[in-house]
Length: 127
Image (cartoon, rainbow, N blue to C red; front, side, top):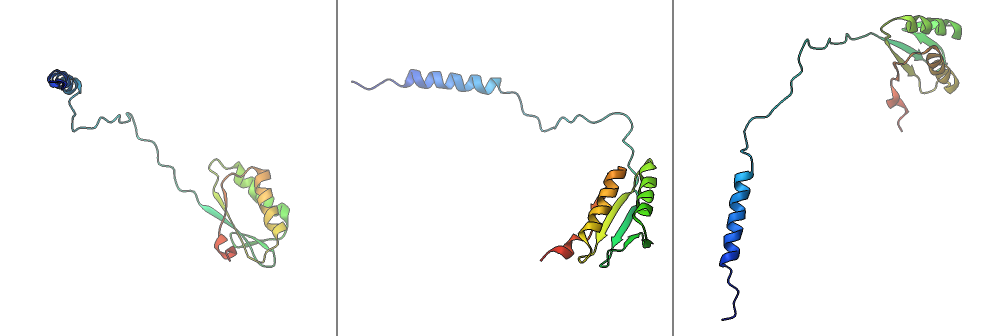
C-alpha cells in the first residue's frame, strides 16, 4: 500500500491547536480606559464677534458705525489687539465692493496682529 499515513500529521496538528488555544489570553468584556485625573479643564467663554461690513460703495462700517478713515479703523483694531481675550472679527464684504478696500481691511488686521478673523457671507459669491 503506497498511501501516506496521515494519523501522525493530524496528531501533531491537534497538539499545536490545543497549545494555541491555551496560550491565547482570556478575552474580557470590559474596556480599560485611562481617565484623566484632577480638575476638569475650564470651559472657554464665548467671545463676542465684531462685524466689519463693506457695502457696495466700499464704505467700511464697524458694528454698524461708519468709518471715514482707514486710520480710525486701524486704531480700533489696535485696541482689540491690546485686549487679553481677542474677540472674533467677521468681515462681511458686499459682492460689488472694491477688492482693494476688502484687502486693505484684512491687511490692516494682519498688520495689527489680530488672529481671529473670518470672511462671512461668501455664499453671495457662488455662481
